[in-house]
Picture 1 (cartoon, rainbow, N blue to C red):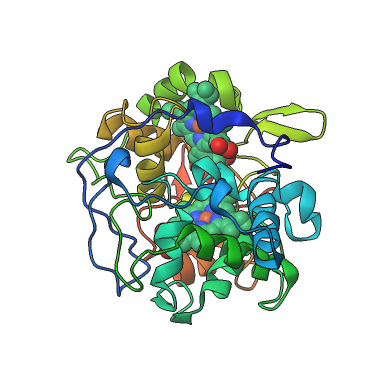
Picture 2: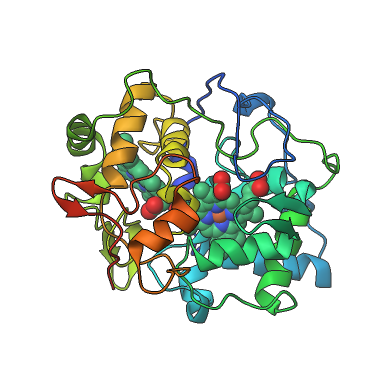
Length: 307
Ligand code: HEC
Ligand code: HEC
């Protein structure tokens, strides 16, 4: 394909790692339990060279561009410094990194998060609202949602409809028997993450764009995002970080560092109830996996939000 030169060539850095944990995306009760996929044997999405040179191919490429360069191409829908591909690695292609080919065939699906059956468009809107801290998401029939859906549909070419593929989502890493430890998480962070993500989780910029995404602070995902759950972040981190060395942390290290990352302030949950962290905790966080929202750590209330 042409027009790809602006994409950071991070995909090349990503080495392939596998672990045999079961998956659980606990907000989607219809799901079966697929295994983590060895990337070599995971579903193979089509290559760019297979894309037809017509209106459909063009829309796929526009969806692809939006996915990897979201902040620049859809600034009105992005309230932080992230791109979709920061959490869905290798352009949404990588197994065990919530690949789009694993997602597309599974919608419509019930989600506990909003207690209704969600179309794929609504699922994309959710990531705009929370992971991208984007405020009002693009309309279901907008160019953005149509292009992103077309890109996901294309990546899922020849995948079974409604059949869960191994490598979907971030296969779950069970909580260690001893729970998690924030002090140990800080050590892991300093030794293995700070070199790229910064000592204060602030990421690294070249000009106006992040080349290393922030993990907390005003340009990160907000308190309503799936990644704020320690269990979800631990699963993402275990399979995908440090970049290029996925699978190298122990489960304990993944949980410790996920907790450390998610004890830091970030933009408020846009569902904030009556301006109250406590009411929001009870309504949205008390039964949402393992998280620190609304709890007090070292005498400080977590979840106050940051602008
Ligand atoms: C901060 C990390 C992050 C960013 C950025 C992000 N996502 Fe996600 N995304 C997640 C997480 C975490 C999940 C799983 C959510 C869960 O378990 O509730 C998810 C789930 C999804 C799913 C459903 C996956 C499935 O198998 O059901 C789709 C589709 C998706 N994201 C698309 C997008 C798009 C499009 C963007 C950009 C507009 C985006 N995401 C940005 C973290 C992110
Ligand atoms: C070699 C540099 C590097 C190291 C080391 C590294 N990361 Fe990352 N990380 C990245 C890059 C780059 C991305 C975005 C990937 C992309 O866009 O393809 C990322 C994405 C992430 C994300 C999702 C995006 C976001 O901003 O929330 C999280 C969470 C994360 N890393 C956590 C960690 C943790 C925890 C460690 C240490 C265990 C770590 N990373 C080590 C480079 C690194």
